[in-house]
Image (cartoon, rainbow, N blue to C red; front, side, top):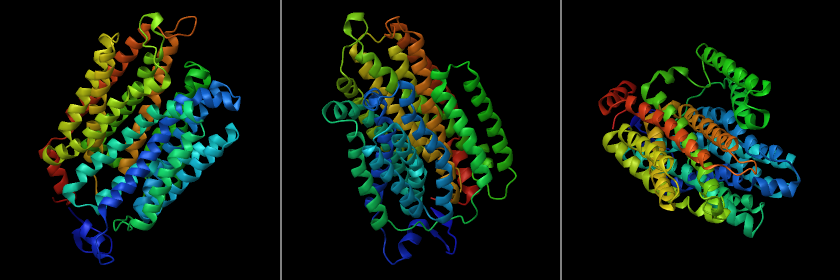
Length: 489
């Protein structure tokens, strides 16, 4: 893969990186450090969800107040991801990775020591600020690794982000039951510290940069829009979906999003180049990421809830929190396997095929329990199909984007994909939780119909991913796009 690097001749990027200081960096260690950072961030995203009740009881706060532990994380991630990703393209991905990993470590240590809800919310916001780890990591891989290893490595990193979310759900129960909720943060802090040390001492600065100015106006408008949208989704069940607060924030988010697009089309150096959204390989990948964010967290709400219901009601399985989490292990394992496989398929056939297979797999994963979820094998098979689908599709979306955009815009393009997945996760969690709540008995137990409707809802959303994958560019169209960008190999 050849690109003109600022201040260098047109040479393969990995060669430019190697000749800058006379030796080639250890790409295996680089991938390891990036994987640890991404795993830590993803684990921290989902790890607290099963423990919210425990944390709320310990801090003497209501369920509504405890939900801010999740909300603060999502808001910070959505708002700051495009900013840090753009800074990475501008001043160097290694520099910004050090900043975001430092924020993640400080936030994690602060959360482990938090004596009150206020401190914990600040800590979670600091953790969420590290959301740019994904786009920065993919940018580093594109810059440093040989072209024939990029697809597989990005598949691995994408799978790790999905795996981390699953590991968080699985591990939360045993940690809280055998230690305390503070250990939900002490344990990931070790991984973050190792990743940070690795980036500082074992990673060269990327040779690919796009100097310029940060679009502060665009960043502010986008921040208002994302905060409004995510806040309305996160708090809608507490405020009421038809309340003035919820509808008002949704309207504000939509209006400011339109304003953001108009501003970005006019400024010289936009935070996000909206013209990239016209590229078929980009916007189809964003739709798939949005859908799979919904599907992944829809699974994380539906399956543990179903498994933990008492057997006496006729459709529950009577599992503990820890046991229910273990039933998500097949999903996690399939993500680990499917991510690198997606990278291999991308190299041979392009992103369209694994994206399409992943979309069909996840759709089938929800149709199966929608038709019947009275046997444990139905839950397990559904989880296996979900893991395969998520691993294939999310790895393919990242590869589809880097195949479609100039190398100097990798960070900002991937950041939008990360935001789409974050918003999808928030919508999936809120919608499925609302469905369960609205279909519960007077005693507060979810009815069997809640799960049937929930699985069908996820299946219906997954169909959108199939449609987007069908519209994604073919191998021939992808190669034409690469030639237009001057990318070879």
